[in-house]
Length: 631
Ligand SMILES: Nc1ncnc2c1ncn2[C@@H]1O[C@H](COP(=O)(O)OP(=O)(O)OP(=O)(O)O)[C@@H](O)[C@H]1O
Image (cartoon, rainbow, N blue to C red; front, side):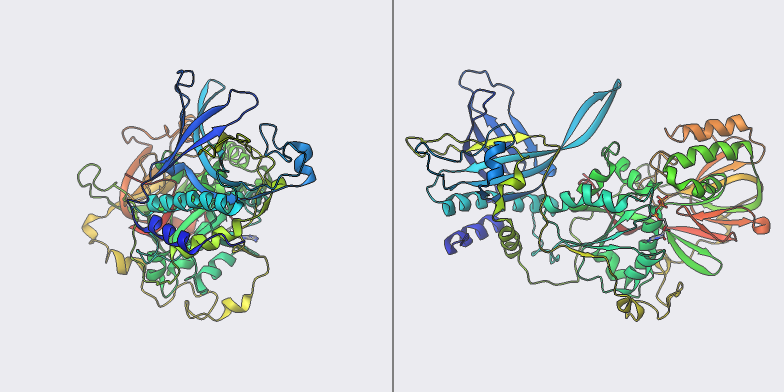
């Protein structure tokens, strides 16, 4: 079937590239619900979103307008429903179904075209006396049936689809297109740790992330990690130029591997300029994913994976701080925390309870409180020089990075390619998506199509042809790489360090404050949450250039400590003023020396050898994907 006539091509090009043509599409649709009275709706699609306005001559439908903001729409799909016996018998989803025969009993040729618009809308609900805000999937179906031929109806549906995609693209890229910004077509590298959390990452990914990627028509390549450091080697040694984003599906440990793999490449500057990082929380801690949601006031529970999937397809990113760490003459990069003492003990020692998921932390916290330990050591730090309030903590969004990569695929070509894969989806595939009944046998072909919106929990999904699953790795691709130093354990490559390039040498010694003594713990955080239920540094932002250093001294009582630990989940554990036992200080660098190299030392929740460690913040070093635009 030829969908795009030359004339239509030209029109679409105009639509895509002329902002005035992009401004608005309008039409009248008819909703023929069996339960409710039939209604006429004026539907408007523009840069703000999709507005469905009930035609109210008698005022009965007042207040029933439905507006879906463009920020909540992730994609659309044009389809031609094909009849099948199953479709006949089920009668679709029970709301309304394209009729299968006309008055004469002859099978109907379904000449209509359908546009499904996929949106995830914020909904507020009261649950257990609490206000719960969550995103819910909504499918809006527009049925185009004004023309006699399917080709003409499809052309009309396609016009809406392309306009929708272009508005979405313009919203993300602030009025430009990927072509004009020299940004290659979006494609995500996904690295999944099947062992993370309670071991369900693969299943969760397929159930909750793949559907969203497909609805948004975002192509991706999935690699399942085979062992520890697989992701590190992968991103350190492969050619990454085909991807615009790298996302991990797992916990913070997997993300740590990716950050280090990227920053230890010889071409790390190009990579961090051109590729954003993302995370889908399937681990046991999930501090970064929780922090990202918190910083952007996006709902996290009860659907953290859905939120993260929407973030992956959304296209927004912001700079995120990275901490450069020197430990035992090696350099590593950290995005979450450095810990020594109580919290690290709980994190690492509770590993033996991993099958319990997040509960392992609660159980081991009680155990370690009863068997409280202190550690001797020295902490030195450079307090952060505070500039004007807010000046340092104003993360800005990256919306138009200059891309060094060139590409020749136009947005139009991309859309057309995507569109072709949309065609001909069997109706059975959509039987749980509410479909439509249009006004049959109209005496005149008025612009009277149908729409219906539904919050559909169940869905059927289709994969887009371009996405690839790689379950078997080609290790030979990794073994010799022009992007990394030769050996697998080249932890300290000859490439320039992040700090050398971005911030220069550390300030002189007069700025250092030194404390020596007995500590219950020293924990440095640069994200608000260390785990999904651990609101450790409430003041922290993704890009505030600050390490939030919390020191708990020996001599603190168990009840004080219990209070501290219990209140960590609400972020009310820190004293408003430093006291004899708990101190909070904002620093730009610190040096930790555990005497006798005692205790457990962690970086991003992963254990490192207990030895002297130096850390310093590199503000906004990488780009992290975020749920929505920052204003
Ligand atoms: N296929 C694998 N088999 C075993 N270990 C793996 C595999 N892939 C990655 N790893 C390692 O598992 C460690 C933990 O992984 P990850 O962070 O994904 O889960 P988690 O520990 O449950 O989550 P969190 O770090 O949030 O607590 C990582 O340090 C990573 O190196």
